[in-house]
View 1 (cartoon, rainbow, N blue to C red):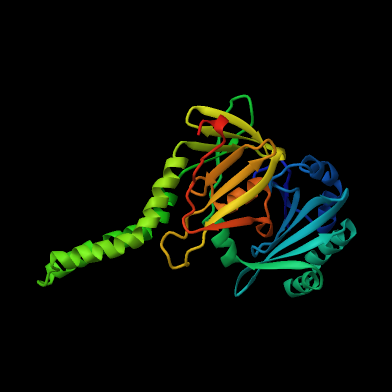
View 2 (view 1 turned 90 degrees about the vertical axis):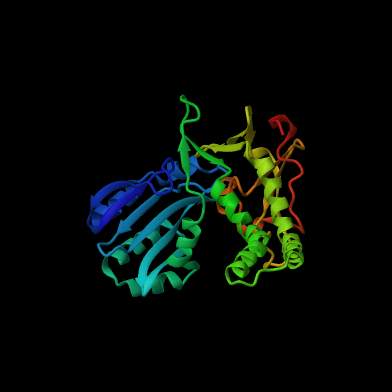
Length: 328
């Protein structure tokens, strides 16, 4: 079975290839891996980062990943198993002891996938399908690594993307241009609209498009000059607003509030959202999701979906883009 290792300093999908190993060699690798030291390095990092991992990969593409983590000064392991049952699926077994993990490794070498799944499902676990993995990882931000400081490790950079901004205003533009499309169609078919009907439709559908256009220009105005920089295993992050730079600390954050639209889900402007981060000194950092998407934001600030505080507004307009000392 092919064995791979991940250390806490690695990127999300980065592994060290060890090669094909027997059961006894794999157990030796597990026992010699510095689990305590690697989990200690990420103990106080406020980010969903690369956990120390041992990966066992079968020739048919199925695998398990054993992730080490520290909870209340005690070492535990989660097991992520990817298997194929019509479609690719993922199941994660939670909170194993080192003795249980060693037994699990032995079973993985000798028992069928069905038996392994039964063992995982017999205790605390979560389950997902590859379709959800595709939606989650395929449409979230791809990490862009930049050398922001030549004397420091690389940074993850996030800034407003034109494609994301356009996707948010797309349906509002459809409503805005719909009367023109109707008019062109009626001209081509030899039965054109009267000017009065055209203006009536333009006014009616324009009113429906207006909230999305207002939100679009508002979010673009407050996002176009903002760049975020994060480093792995570092609780400090950098915010650039044009030429103004400030270094902020995740340890100083007091609250996160997500501002969302409370209009019907069928309204074309409901996709506009922003985060308001309040610091202990009273400063506020406001970030549109045109800059950083929801999942990537939660990853870098280690926020669980159940921990999000939401404030609903008919029009989630950004009134203050950043703290005063960033140059808003």
